[in-house]
Amino acid sequence: MQYLSRMKLYSINTGYFKLDGGAMFGVVPKSIWNKLNPADENNLCSWALRCLLIEDDNRRILVDTGLGNKQDAKFFGHYFLHGDDSLDKSLAKHGFHRDDITDVFLTHLHFDHCGGAINIENNKMVPAFPNAIYWSNERHWQWAIKPNDREKASFLKENIQPIQDSGKLKFLEVMDGIKFTPNITLRFAFGHTDAMMLPEIHNYKGKTVVYMADLLPSIGHIPIPYVMAYDMFPLTTIQEKKAFLQEAQQHNYILFFEHDPNHECCNLHLSEKGIRSKDIFRLDEI
Image (cartoon, rainbow, N blue to C red; front, side):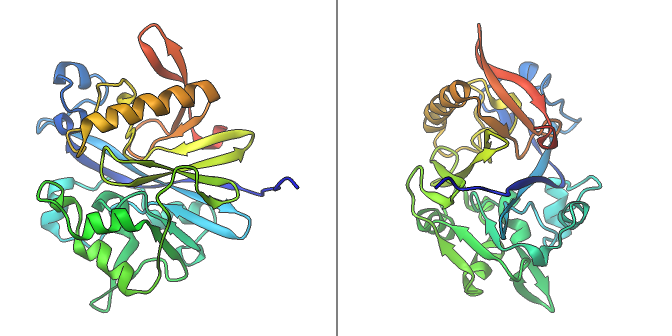
């Protein structure tokens, strides 16, 4: 019997932050990448913190949570959180409250993806979504709680440990194609960080929508050599990008970008330069 879904997707903008443009584009020269996302006088570019809310029958699944607001002024002095959007405002725009969230799906545990998962209340670290189960996988969790020296600054204990302490943490099996819901399967990537999870949402208005997280932070990262210096294993990222882009172009997937400051979604086509973006549009235009 075919599964009939009442699924709806909502773009949840939680603001913008700044990162070094050279770090975001790796070996690509500034004379090239600066045309894609112009830097300020400090070589910093603005990037989105765009989450995704999936309303799938009786579940309301939030994919990633943005930076949050519990860090101190010194922290935000490095990352310059700005803009009028916030997680609560964006949820309210679509008629939701954080208490309505049943599942928080964390693609990975870098601070810009999970910082909003935990709040400080009465000097205690508590889940920001009190009625939700939090989803990760054990392989990535172990990678995050015992971080290597290079990645340590991205895994903040105050974002991670309170999730487990709350008793609301569950792990998913690390296996491509595993089902999270009847309409959501998982793709795993290992180049940016170990065992990052990308949800693939099927049968949404007849399309497959893929939440790109940090495999493709923006449209500007579609060309194969455009790999972030933040990636732990850049050659693995290149292999993963090649395989994904070929599949996505052949099957007309819609790519949903977490960090692109200007563009939410695109599909792909094969150009004389390789696979590139074709149509660029908002999620609500699908």
